[in-house]
Every structure is written in C-alpha cells, then in structure tokens.
Image (cartoon, rainbow, N blue to C red):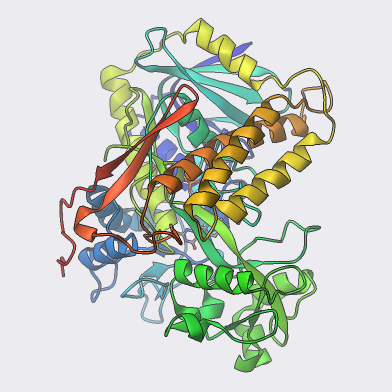
Length: 568
Ligand SMILES: Cc1cc2nc3c(=O)[nH]c(=O)nc-3n(C[C@H](O)[C@H](O)[C@H](O)COP(=O)(O)OP(=O)(O)OC[C@H]3O[C@@H](n4cnc5c(N)ncnc54)[C@H](O)[C@@H]3O)c2cc1C
C-alpha cells in the first residue's frame, strides 16, 4: 500500500477545502498541507456551480444583525446561533479577502460599490455576484492561489474511511483510493478536514455535482460522530425535467425566473400557485416545492411527469435578454423558455444537516475538523439562497486557522489501528460474484424510495416503509459485485462505493425525519403539519451505534435571541 505522511490533510476542494488550505498555509507556511479530492482541483464540487451569489451585509443600510435575523427566521429557529453569528460577521471579512487578496471580480454599481441583488427569504438585497457564474469566479481564483503555493494535490483520490488510533480516541489518518490506479493509499495526518460537501444525490431529481455522494457524512457516521438536522433536505422548486436520457434533468432553473414573474402551470396548463399562497410563485422554496408536489399528486402532469414553468407572458424578447443562459440551457433540451413551456419538478439541492461541530470547526474526534456542507447546524431548517457559499468560505477559513494552531500545539503522527485498516479495506471490496447490471436497478430503487417516501412531503407510514426498504437495499448492495476485475479507473467500483455511502446517509435522513414530529422549513410531515412551539425548539442529533442509529432531540440554545425577539 502506498503511504504518505502530512501535517494537514484536506478532503475536498470546494470553497471550504480551498479556503482551509490557504488559511492553514498563511498561518504557518512551513506546514506540509495536502488537498485530496475525488475529482480535479478547481473543476469539481458544487462551489463551482454557484450561480446566484454570496450573502453578506456590506451596504450602509444593511447590517450583520439583519443578516443574522434573516438566517435565524429562515432556519425556523433551529440554527445554532453562535455558528449563524459567525457566518454573518465573518462573511464580511471573507468577501473582502476574496476581492482584495485573492483576485475575484464581483459585479459593481456605477458608483463603484459592490452590486448586491435580491434573493428569496431576505429582507435586504445582499447577494454579491459575478453575473450568474459566481462560483466559477470564486473557485478559479482560489484554485490559482492554491496552485501558486507549496500545497500538495492528490487529485482523483477518493477518501473511503477515517482511521482512528489503536486506542480509538483520536484520528490517525484516512484510507484513500487512487482512482487512476485503483490502489489503496494510507495518508497519516496530524489534522484532517472533512470538506466533501454533503450533497443529496440520493433523490431521483437532484442538483449537486456527480462527484458528490455523501462520502464524508457516511465516513463520519461510521467513525461514530453525531450528525444533526439530517431530516432537513432542501428542495429547489424548478429543476429541469427533460426525460431520463439526459443528465440535465434535475439541474436548476434559477430562482430569478419566478422572481421576475414566471408562472407555474399544472399538466392541464392551469396556474395553481395563487390557490396555495398569496405570494404565489414568489413564496419561499420549501413552500413552492410543497405546493408543486401536492399539485402533482392531484394528477395533471406534464409528459415527463412534472409541471411547467411559463415565462412567455413577460415578453419573449425580455426573457431571452434577461435569462440568456437559462434560455440556452432549455433550448439544448428541446424547450423554448422565452416563448413556450418548460417542464419542471422540485429537485433535491442541499443538505442542511451534517456533522456536529464547535465554532472552531473541531469535532468530537480529536484531529478531525469539518467545514462547508458536511457541517451541520449553521442553517437549521432552511438554508437561504446565498448562505451556502458564504458558509463554506467562512468555516473553511476558520478550519484552516484552527488546524494550523492544532498541529503546532497538539499534532502528532499516529499509527492507525491495523485491525481498523484491514476492516476498512474489506468494506471497500465488492463481493467476487458479479450480478452484472445490478447497480443500475439498485440506484433506481434508491432514487424512488427517497423521492416518494422521504421527499418533499412525508408521513409516518411512508418513512417507516422507507427505512425497511433502505435496509434491504443496503444489504443487497453489500452483496452485489461489480463488473470488471481491473481496478484502474473502474467507475463501476466507484459507483458501488457511491451507492453504499448514499444508502447509509439516506437511512440517517429517514430516521431523523421519522423522529421529528412537527413541520419546520424543509421538513414537512403531513401527519404533523404544525411547527410546534418555537420556544421549545429542538434539533435532531443521531449517531450510528453498531448497525442502528441512536437519536436524541436536543434543545436549541437561544444564545443571542429568543423567538418573539429581534436584534434589530
Ligand atoms: C447548482 C447549484 C447552485 C448553487 N447556487 C448557490 C448560490 O447561488 N449561492 C449559494 O450560497 N450556494 C449555492 N449552492 C450551494 C453551494 O454550492 C454549496 O453550499 C457550497 O458550494 C458547498 O461548498 P463545499 O466546499 O462544502 O462543497 P463543494 O464545493 O461541493 O466541494 C466538495 C468537494 O469534495 C470532494 N469530494 C467529495 N467526496 C470526496 C471524497 N470521498 N474524497 C475526496 N474528495 C471528495 C468533491 O470532489 C469536491 O471537490 C448551489 C449549489 C448547486 C448544486
């Protein structure tokens, strides 16, 4: 087995991973830092896909208190208030760093101030952007800065297990697979950052990049770490629905279409949103997604089984001018967004849940740190559009600073428990007998269970049935072989590993969803439609004990503001 020792190992090269690398390097340029990533650095993950932009209170009329209140109220009083406060205050520093030190160009007003646009759920227009390709600007500049420094890159290297020391009370390193050769690689590190970006790709319709399969969360579960808010899966209302033959199905048609006055129509081509909410199509993501699924259940469906968005009443020329990228994306799939109808369906977009962590990004396992979408607690029951990339950059930077100090004060290179290493390798080995073609049908079953029973609208019977089906699916997956003995770039093998992570994390989502007997933000229970008392808000915290999940509902600490109060 190839072996490598490093001071700081960063898993993932999104906004969280790259910011962590730059900050750790700045804190101590002599550190040996390694960024290991499942794809190519700068080319994978969801930060690159960010279209809309980055929330930050910059304008004189805005304030961090207002951004904080929007985040708490948007999160239905479930966010950890100290983490949310760090998000809104440190976003101001990070956006300056992105512009003035790292070289990002964001759109500006004629008077030279940074242009900030409106996003849903905010009481102030505070979303900084670069046209509608903000993520490419951020990731390209971060990647260039990482390339320019003495930071090691392990590209196409996939983390598969967190390895503890023999005593089990600290992290020793990570088992990885070099996807080029198929060899196992053992990386020992004094500090490890989990920044693999969550990503709810277990749903039939989903937006995140294909490299994301919840590997980080699955590794954290197997390491015995607590995950919070796992029932909170955000659905974006307008996923493109273009049939099963194209990967474009599920990708986002941006919120600005509804914001500009777009109408949602059912299969009978009737507008339905005004029947559900006075704000109609401009209601928040969770509300519109729920109304759409309710309408779909009534039975009037588009040819691919969804609904339509219609923009033509706004004037095809205006639509073509204002939404050029979206019009082209739809045209590629045979739809005329400017003058006709485009099929849409709600699509799984973001996991608010993740590993429980302290404000310095440390976790319950000494030596392991977490940041970005893998980390839970910042957003509570809902993530505001624009708070995702702010979250990954803010906490990535904090993690980089913390890990540099940790390596200096407490870092040791330890040997992993040999039995745990053997067990981790055995877990990655599919059975020898190949049931060729089995993975596709297992994937379709996973998509179906999660979409139908753990999706936008949930109830006890569906969730209980889903847990049974997921356990069965997990067992069948473990017994399914993959095609081809060759390990170099064996994508079937990686698909098998992806599905194993997704199945495990899906079970945690269904478990938490069954435990939450109320409806908050993204989590809606038909059998418990009320939000429950806000002053007794509790968050779900679960961990894997053997094969079973142990779950507790823990009270939210209102450390800065209580329900009914405001900081404004
Ligand atoms: C289409 C789309 C549009 C979005 N638009 C916005 C927006 O406008 N504003 C906003 O705030 N947020 C937006 N988001 C959300 C935002 O992208 C995320 O919140 C944020 O980028 C997550 O950053 P991250 O660093 O945690 O993860 P990512 O940027 O996703 O990076 C994860 C990294 O981990 C790597 N990885 C995964 N598994 C492994 C493994 N096993 N081993 C090694 N590496 C691994 C991946 O390859 C990747 O490099 C959008 C998301 C999508 C999908």
